[in-house]
Image 1 (spheres, rainbow, N blue to C red):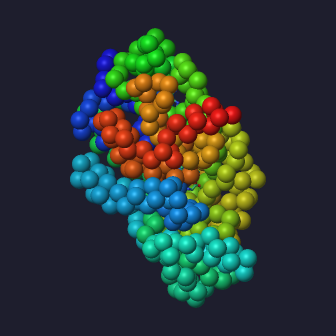
Image 2 (spheres, rainbow, N blue to C red; image 1 turned 45 degrees about the vertical axis):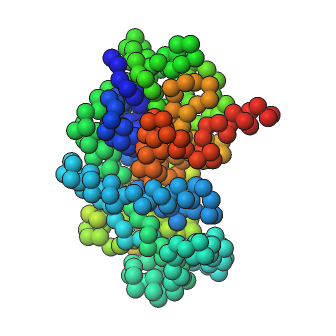
Image 3 (cartoon, protein in one colour; image 1 turned 180 degrees about the horizontal axis):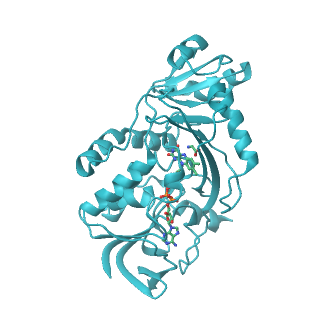
Length: 371
Ligand code: FAD
Ligand code: GLY
């Protein structure tokens, strides 16, 4: 089996790259389980470029660039596949329930206005006018009109369908266990006895990204950060915006589902839903909206956010392995970053230097040499 580009991992990152690269390459995706079955389905789907930002840095700008790509992506997926991926641009509300929350939020988000991004301060009355089911204890907050959400499960479904229409070949239930190396060059992968040869291999195996035997040393490890989420359901939609409280968030879908997330547990690959996390999520949801927090939990699940030692994405070519590219470490923002990752990696595959140095794997090589 020979292909121009072989992608290891069919999560939102692998699928987005496959779709983009299929324009001018033969592409094969090898996925251990079912495409989209891991973090990409577990996620809440927030497009929180501003809500999750800590400063005006390269990472923030990358998130903003990616956020801009969603309207066109959603429209083109709808046209190609007939699947509406639920892009919702109602914006995000950040709530404060104490004076300390108010000053912490002001400190954290004030720079956004100065940097030219839309952010509005709202009084408690204005917030409750927008969202009548929010707790009467709310003291104020911010509105981020340009952030949004997408139904990430529909997104991965539509991406896979679009890939199929573009001729991408899928091998699901197929685990890559090692790379095939010839003279320092990556020439394909193995799954047991099954061999795939490829001109370029892109590693997009999420939290398992550095578990595969690469045949050479990578000077960093990708690890999982477990996130637990609860799902409630209301008979009709009660909330319009993504709502971020001081201790958790809620993401209301159009059909009445409300996701309440999410924990950050450094618990390895343990996929348990724990009582402690469930209690915490009920509390953080009740703080936002007591009526929501008292509803019966419809579903609960976990997922593994993939993170690098510096918690930044790891994109592009690997110094000591010709033909290998990485698309790893998307941590809390892999849904948001999926279109921009696809573009950057596709450019790199096409021989264009596109990856900002902040995100290149080479940063770990210089650190390892200096230590
Ligand atoms: P994955 O979706 O995990 O895909 C990796 C794939 O690689 C898997 O399907 C796996 O089976 C496959 N694989 C692994 N090993 C092998 C192998 N050896 N051979 C073949 N295949 C292999 N991001 C946002 O932008 N917004 C959010 O609101 C958001 N909320 C989140 C909430 C939670 C609870 C969690 C857990 C994550 C959230 N994220 C969010 C983060 C986002 O889900 C991830 O960053 C993103 O899904 C990572 O995508 P991925 O394709 O790299 O990983
Ligand atoms: N970005 C939301 C989360 O990772 O929980």
